[in-house]
Length: 67
Image (cartoon, rainbow, N blue to C red; front, side):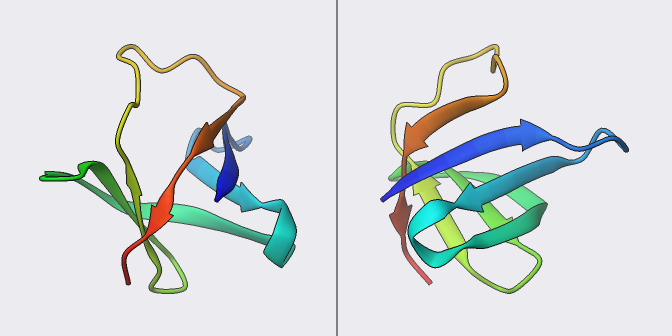
């Protein structure tokens, strides 16, 4: 699914999923077999296989929901 990553006014990373009209803060970031894994405040886990470093925001990326 396509998601947009940005930082809010407090500097926290935020994920927006347009198809679900969902905007949640990232509460945890880990590295896994599928790439960078972000855990959202609502409990979702999204895997980003090709996330560049450094991250230039805001930007849209392809992600896969794993939980």
